Image (cartoon, rainbow, N blue to C red):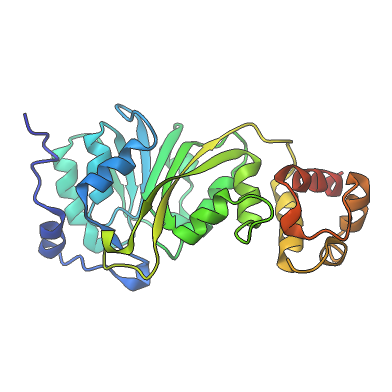
Length: 277
């Protein structure tokens, strides 16, 4: 028997019917390949009966795949043009799709969702990194999310998984790897999207873990901001403006002539602990 979601018209028809041409101002690029969308929905693992939070569903391509996988989806969409198309999708999966017409940057997810939830989203390019940073700095920890399956520009994805010594290694790498485990699950070429972006994309899967050490998030952010703010400088120069920065280097036995990109995540956490202490 055909799944009610599979019986829906093709996404291109939905986009044409509701006048949903992608808006650059909203950072929209739609993924229409249903096989790729199904692959993304499989990244978090079994979703039958699970709660999933989606940001920026647009015409509902990934939403279809998540509903087909058996998830209960809460989708936040600020583009009013997409709401009728999402309402049709909700009718094909009764009781399993809640659509919130709001700006995702202004939502308190813990209050909205009320239960531990997987996040799966083709994030709008213009808010993707800001939302991710907010989710990675959630307090208390473990966070309200069970896993993050997120589409980014490939350059951002590479920063999340980068290791010390590489050009991509920076603040985002440290933040992501301190108390979660990121991996690149899928690479996507520009031609997979409508309209095709100028860059390649990648799907990243992130699972929360125990932190290396429980240091204050804001302190770790301050240390990495100072260190990577002038990444070509030696640490003794870049940390000079941070209160307690030079003393922390000495307390941790870290050579002040090293540069930020040579420090491991554990060393940054130790510095943050010394600064906070």
